[in-house]
Image 1 (spheres, rainbow, N blue to C red):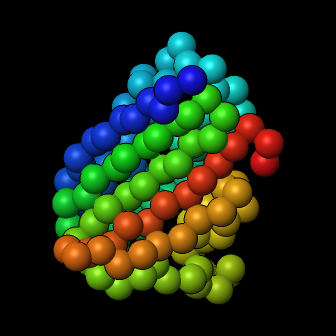
Image 2: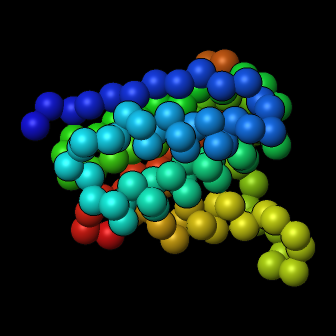
Length: 126
């Protein structure tokens, strides 16, 4: 199966994560991706986008690639600082990257010329 890609530009606003989830779900309608993987992907995308909105506070871009078995979600923003680990569990919020770590096969970040890329890879086998 050929790889399918989806791209969405987002402003750093409160509703960006919801917009990203809804647009991704529409894009995946009719795909071969299992419902469980779609749910996990939506949560991972929500956390990556929210992290970018809260910490980078710059326009961002979501790129999702699906090859029929594995999906990679990437968020690009203009802040060069790597994502921070979660705050202590008793704080409100701050557990997004722990969820990303739990739901994805692997994830990471890398500096880019004009900011950074934070990505997560999920598969049907996870």
